[in-house]
Image 1 (cartoon, rainbow, N blue to C red):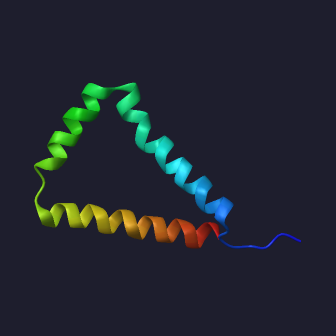
Image 2 (tube, one colour):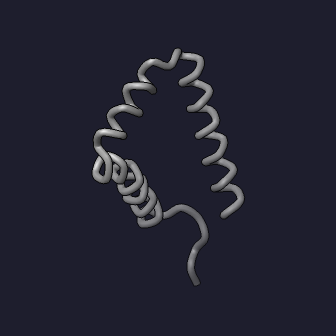
Length: 67
């Protein structure tokens, strides 16, 4: 019987998926990625924290929903 939960294989698969997603735009469209990244660098600390919080909450909700 399989155990439910996070094992090392699941963790490394998730990390691999993050790397694939993170590498997609710089590979497909480096100029657009660079322009977008430069715009993000102009954000204030509050804006960056807000986007970080939204990402964290969305990730937690998705994990909770899928688990």
